Length: 416
Image (cartoon, rainbow, N blue to C red; front, side, top):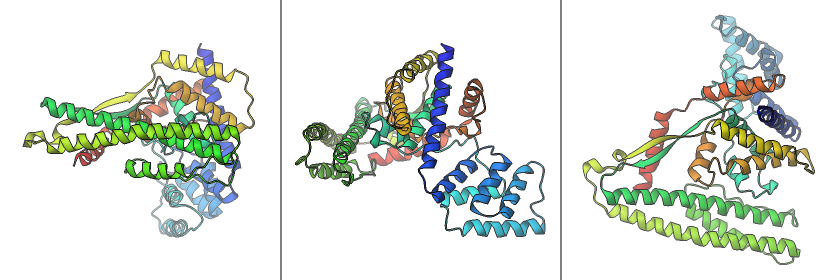
């Protein structure tokens, strides 16, 4: 069983490396150079050769040598404050700051590296926004997510199999008044249900447009990006857009598929509109209640610490299912499709153990920092990679105090 587990870990890492390679190969020279430099400078422990390469790629040999020396002597008191080095530092700082060919994020990475500062393992790295929702709602339609989304799913899978715990906070009522306690819990449960339904609707909407794009390549998907601040407005935009989606003059199979998806879309739209009306009623009831000084919302709710974690037995079971999938005969049209299918299978296997139907879990995963796995070498054995991954996952720290403050502000604002 352990052999199968390690086999899946190895297969996942290979898919991760391959997806990065394909993404880079599809980019223009300038964009590829920017991405390579960002990947290097985002590492917690890049090699001096990597640092030299990143700087020379975008600037010149003189700056590359300076950054390399700063890195090599960062723990040995390199005299950066000598007049000559000060002049160099100011000169290079201006060169980076005024560069028009790199993004602000990459500029910041270069400026930090110029003084020997690199990524802190405790902070982790940002996950791609909405990566899990896209794959989860894709229904196996690979055009609905890209290789970066797949890459993030595979990284998450490796983290979870290595024993990663992802912490988040759940809202718990502490109201002593039974009516207020019941009403508060009803509102929060309904809010979760609305977000779940919205994710389904958004997924169906994209499936409709993807079906049309197969027979009409120039037909553009009308993106509705802002998914949380104003769901009612987003739903109106989605509904207007899908109503303009005609099935006339379409092949019979495509016409049937689009109509089925449109029916599913409108069915769920009716449900969520009812939920939103119910939410308005509950919030109106809440605002009509009288509250004493000791019954302020901020004093009567608690953000309870919870975490997403797979027990060892579950990890073995999941790895075995993935092992069976990998060793089944597949007929992929490309390496890109193979990687996307791998990511989709991961989500299918994880959806029940992680309870991905629960929108709070989905959000917690997507907003969590991912472990900085950049120091793991291709030459390491699978066991070494697994052990290093576990240690890197343990290094990621969640600032519970700041997270609690942030969520408290958001929650209170929703009841005003």
